[in-house]
Amino acid sequence: MLGQFDPEFTALMNETMQMLRDLFRTSNRWAYPIDGTSRSGLEAVLTGLIEPGDRVLVPIFGRFGYLLAELSERCGADVVTIETTWGSVFDPAEVIEAIDREKPSIVAIVHGETSTGRAQPLDAIGRACRNRDILLVVDAVATIGGMPVETDAWMLDAVIGGTQKCLSVPSGMAPITYNDRVERKLIRRKRIERGIRPEGYSDDGDPAAFIRSNYFDLTQLQDYWSPRRLNHHTEATAMLYGLREGLRLVLEEGLEARFTRHRLHERALVAGLEAMGLSRYGDDSCKMTVVTCVRIPAGIDGEAVRSQLLADFGIEIASSFGPLKGQIWRIGTMGYSCRKSNVLLGLAALEAVLPLHGAAINPGTAVKAALDRYAEAEGAAPDA
Ligand SMILES: *Cc1c(COP(=O)(O)O)cnc(C)c1O
Image: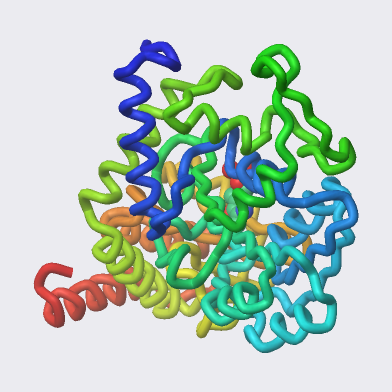
């Protein structure tokens, strides 16, 4: 193990920051992980940005939108939500209309809504927020490293990623990035711990405006991630090795190649599911490539199917939440697991297991349909 101030370790920190900038496609100064799962990144950013009474608009199109609204409420925000039907996303014009009506100072939105498998286009919303001097916070936990997330080009002010989704890094860290618009607001709310205040420091700010968390105080965390290396909590050093290695593999593959790979295997999976006769859930025009939602056939016990897939094949597929519980399965094709052998095995397993649970499917078709799709893709682009 290395200590958290060991120059060898701080060099790894700097490397990781640069890799995160590449991952988020940003030239932001700040890109570093929060210690804790993805939710800790969401909480750190929202706690840092929301002063009690701030108006926060949260457009909701699935479970994780509700989470953003709840976190904002806990920060004392005056939360306004708009909702659209699960299984679809917002027309950006609808969100912009709500922005002009509600006049929030912050908009918090999910990019890839894992609960419904839909991805919200963000570029027009980003531009609208920038033009109106509103801060845009984006939950890209499930999409980062699997689908394009263009922090700078889409004008996103703060973005939170996840490790255990498309990066294939163990859970326990939340990579974030934010720009100087965000930093300015954080610094206004800065407070230095009493025990380590420099001589002569006094804070004459309004106590009501201070960032409410110590552990998630981004001003203190960024002081540790900066060359000043001011002490805050002990860095989760072994976790950082994992994140750095995961990022190294992601960037070695190349982001574009990675997005193409996720699309390829998604299409093969979808071809197989369709051939089997299963119907999918949600609007295809905004489907995430990294999650595929399948309707559980009527009368079938979805949990029993999931259990058998896990017990007999070592394959775990997900159920869903809220109104979709018991209605759909969600099949992830994310990161390392997003590969031909897994897609073929998954389809073969479903094909074998479903009839045992009483589902009428077209037997003997799924794997072939997926293989055909792979052959087509290889014909079109030999190195796809
Ligand atoms: C998984 C997920 C989260 C929560 O992440 P944890 O790592 O479980 O804290 C938040 N938002 C989205 C969109 C997710 O997919």
